Length: 119
Image 1 (cartoon, rainbow, N blue to C red):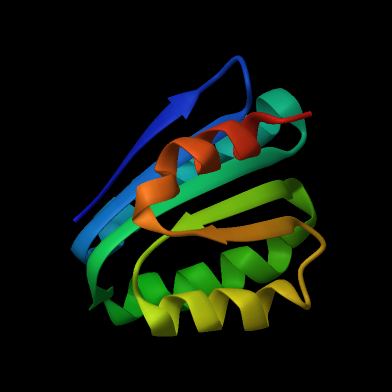
Image 2 (cartoon, helix red, strand yellow):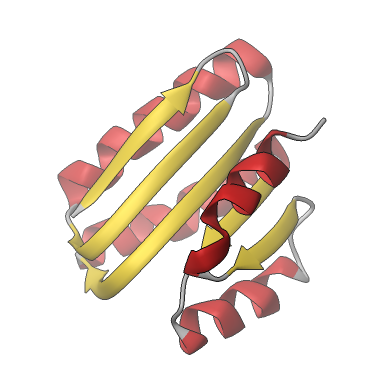
């Protein structure tokens, strides 16, 4: 399941992932991100990932294509996880992204929230 909250004033979206992600959940997240991009030009995102078990194939494909076409619209991305493979994938992917990307352990979720909101 994926849920999210937006901070319209700051242009920040915080996602929480527990288990798997459906296409409908992903589409709702994309809609929220696009609304924030329309308001602010760029967004910052925080993902708190717990026990990720995957996503529906159609959601995965949309994630890849959305990311490629919107990579310049993300200012900062913080990933909170204790998963080694998610941390490694995030660090590898961050090398080709224009956004600032940082990984935090679950014990530092408040630090991630503070960092994502820094100007």
